[in-house]
Amino acid sequence: QVQLVESGGGSVQFGGSLSLSCVASGSISSVNTMGWFRSALGKQRELVATITRDGTITYADSVKGRFMISRVDHPNTVYLQMNSLKPEDTAVYFCDADVVNLAGRYFEVWGQGTLVNVSS
Image (cartoon, rainbow, N blue to C red; front, side, top):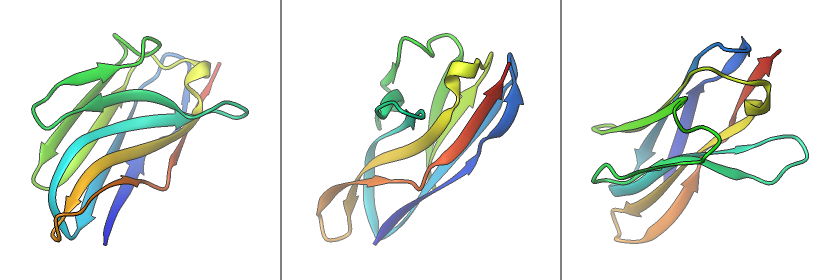
């Protein structure tokens, strides 16, 4: 079994910063792409940022220049540094990882979500 455990998040004022982290644990052989998505009230879940094993990064246009994604492989952890936060960044943030388990099976795992609230 593989799980993702997120930490960080919380409440901050406009222009502030927060950081999120997400650790993958369990019967893992390898972790490929890791990333962050978010779901705001009344909106569909959207991509925030992803990072592959070789370090290729993708950002949503709305966060470019303000957010930074990074990862370390031991343990399998992905980080999201969020700067210059805006009220429209308010959402539940979910960690996501593409995992190969010890049996060689490939599947996608999601974290439980962590709330980021930005007040104006």
